[in-house]
Length: 113
Image 1 (cartoon, rainbow, N blue to C red):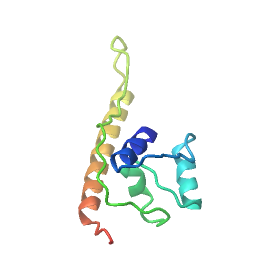
Image 2: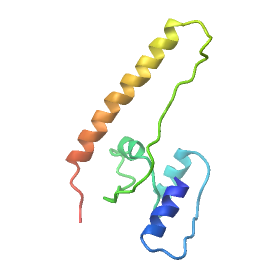
Image 3: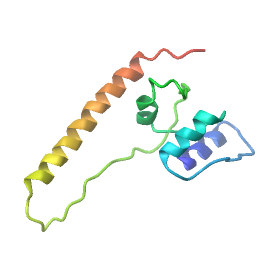
Image 4: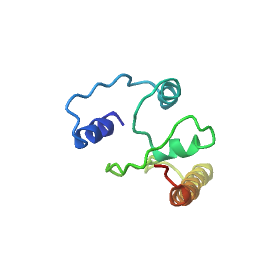
């Protein structure tokens, strides 16, 4: 996210970039944002999850970034365990459902001016 923020600011023509806070967990970044006037890049899923708190505001700025993926790794020579297969299906279905919820939210948001 730090690299995405730096890249975005440079694309806007910023010549001097000062990063005041970096590192820590995602929740530490959220807590910092709640206590300060700051700009950052966060995954839309995080902003979506915090939408009812109204503690942070999303800006209608499209930021080009590479696709990122979540993967489950398991040994290829391991015997099949039904619980692992069930968990993998659960994760896949949960993210698929979340993708549809986020898409619906993105299409329904009316950005203020």
